[in-house]
Length: 126
Length: 258
Image 1 (cartoon, chains in turn yellow, orange):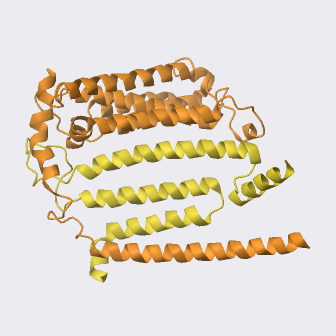
Image 2 (cartoon, one colour):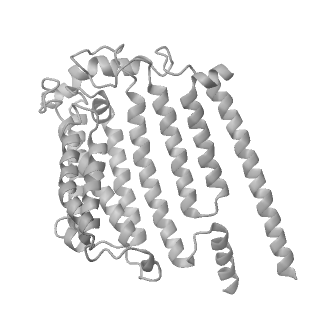
Image 3 (cartoon, one colour):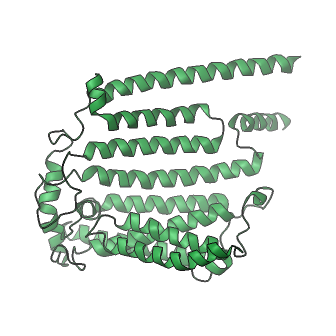
């Protein structure tokens, strides 16, 4: 087990980053910090995918000197997948930040508990 | 009295919730660590992810698409519709943010925002960005246009181009930036680029989704005018990404774009 952990150190770092982001998502009450946690989770997934595509001693998948042999280059597919992931994460981040901005305009706080309390109080007032 | 017990109950619940979350995340961490230890070894050519698909892309890619950069060949030729979907996601994100942030009455939040209407009085920022912003834009254009020849492409080059537009808007003020980089211009460029992408990709799909049958020759790999339709597709993606970054940045820094 220890050997596997040492060998797959990229995956280990990705897993730890994932858990840091996930814990931030759970425990932080500040909505903007929750989004930062979500972005840390995204980053850990990119790191994991990039590590899956790497092959020791091979070059990046840009054909050099006309050598079109699969033995010379790393796996190009995870790079394409990460590109998709980055685009989706940017879009989701922008959308949630816009929602948070509207929440802030209404309740003048970023604290989720406070927002829920204020919303409940407003409902009782009606 | 009642509010006091309610408050203490709330506090007890929040402590319980935090402890439960921490416990859950620790359990998750240990499970994932065991999984990471049992994954195939890092960097091994025999890993299951290195199957016949990447070998096919690398061995046939340059001949079929004319692109030297296999990632560009993959995302714009073999999986071009996926990239079209990504560009649409960016477009929808901009639309959603616009719908959420536009036409909002100004209130206390505006005090937190920088007033970007006038240009900054910072001489150093202005002087540096006058020299640096065109260089960044030129580098972004280089990365986009060389997408099929070198690492990079529409997405990374578009992000670089977008950052030069942001630098220009932040240092010279939005009033100055609005002369060229107005919201209407960005929106037009973005929609036109998206339509161009859809047209090119739809054409290539109708012609058999193969680089040869589109009538555009893949050309000699390594030349700037090679790789058939990948170069215009890269330019379209780059414009979409640059305009998205710029519109989102201005919307979030100012709340509204005119």
